[in-house]
Image 1 (tube, helix red, strand yellow):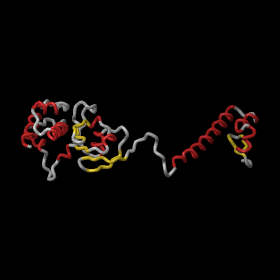
Image 2: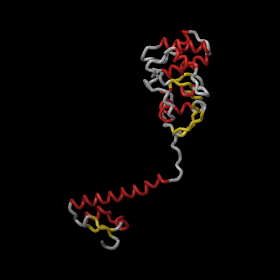
Image 3: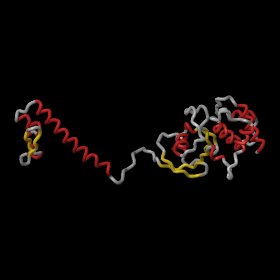
Length: 228
């Protein structure tokens, strides 16, 4: 290696300071009458040098201690009021409440069935109103009271009257839709403690039962209403 020069594939190439005036790497290769192989190697070497410089200096931009939030972005770490408790959770922008409850907070009583707001297995209460959590974005329920089937438990572990009535009337069959049926019934009885059978049927009409145990569920709601 000569002073202030770089050796590329057997060709002496001037340092960057002098290369700026006489055509750089490609200019030097042309003047010395390099072969095609040497020409290609020179192009590759010069490209690699430029790329590595961009990687080193461009990559340093991500090392800043403070990064401004992206315009229009959504804060991911949020607080939710679930069953009377404040829960901090990391939520993706388009994450549904059902996914957050089941896989972030471990409340697996909320079931995922159709995942398209048709079967009602994912029913929870939002401010006392029965809601399909599979079609509700978690970011839209901040500041609202979320109640799941786990939140029906009494202070001493006793069952909610609707849950007890479901057992007494043999409501559940396979049991997959039962949490959603229970939550829909609870919402009804909190709004209307003495519903007619038709009103109960309408309130549960958004909850499908793959076992066809609809009469058992209706009997359970009427029993819970009488015992309240």
